[in-house]
Length: 411
Image: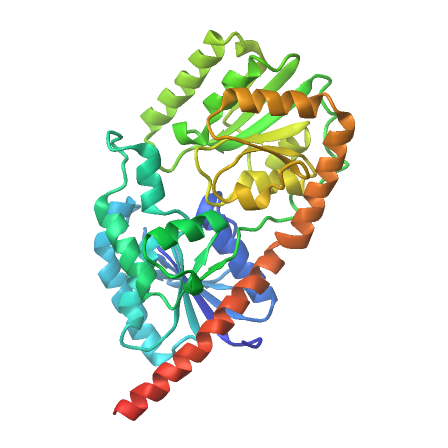
């Protein structure tokens, strides 16, 4: 693939801005911007959720955003959005029939449905990234949870994975999950999530003075699977140390459930006798997050499962060692005993032991932090992620040409 050829990414939900606030939106925006910097033409298709804004707009970072008229003009849940994917796919098919891209890249399972509906008659190669798998979420939440992933999603993900020209997994752990779904390992490539290494940097002259007491920081959506309760329970066995939780609104929970989770964590802190050492912050903006991470002696990431490892990467980019659950993408990201310490998921005892070990050794804190930043710069900048993604695209483009030759011969 050479500069100037078109790469198209589709996404099921409106990113709303050039740099969306969290999760998959950040990945989409940053990857699109990095591909554009590398000289590729990038168009992001997103479902229109309101009457506001033009149908097409060129973002400040150079890629184009197209708002696709599909379904009602309001924000929908994933299950509601599924009914609009036929309309979404029809729009893409009409557009791509007039000017077909070199490659299509669908993010999340719903986008995979729309993309494959559009490309099945056009012979266009499709790359698929799920970001999270229904099988994993179902296993974590359990059959009794009202948010349990539907079996329809799991079934559709299998079909989308098998129909894609190539799968991009965000971790080695996801490779094994896809294999359990019946996808051959030879059709999957790992391309991890990245981090803005300039925004999340080790030092900044405007930072306030470091706190005198030792500090642990953790961050993520305010939901049970983030594992904040694990860190709170561990804190009881970590003397003279404070904990700051940068809690964002969970996209999976209602406002009421969000407040219930905060209340649950507050009660847990009181029950463990650490309420005075725990602070749950809901006001940490994207601009302030690097400052908070740099204020930590170590950053703790203890979700039940993490397909992206975003918080760990942000902490490492800030030059901070990470105590992380040995699950999901963090098995790849965090080098145990080099950039941080890996611990069993949902184990307060293991977190406490790792924290005591780190916080009692200033040399270890420093060397782990330096190694963490070095690892980010070598492997996880968005420009590096874009390079790896383009290599995946290059493996798929010849498939398209072969398909076209076969079609012509068939006619």
